[in-house]
Image (cartoon, rainbow, N blue to C red; front, side):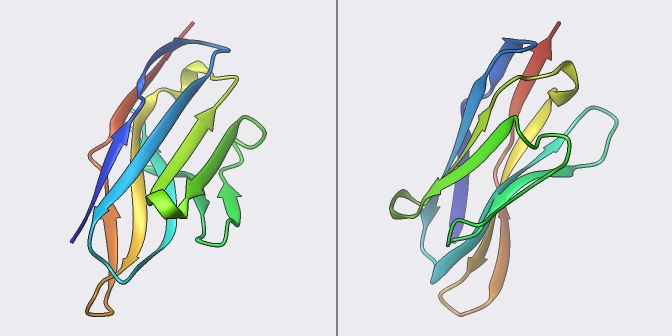
Length: 120
């Protein structure tokens, strides 16, 4: 089983920066894509950014040029650096990982979520 633990959420003023990290622990055959999703109050969960094990990235249009996703495969950790934050970036941010279990089954694992609040 793989568990994801996020850290780094908090409150920041608009225009500021914040970094999130998410560490995977447990046992698995491999971890494929990792990424970040967010859910604002009253809205559906949406993709923020993903990164493959090879380092290819994908971003939501709303965060392109402001957010940077990266990962350290040796530490099984994914990061999200958020710059030029806007009030509309306020949400609970969830870490996500696509995992191949030891039994070679595909699993989707979610973190518990970390709140990011951007105030004006």
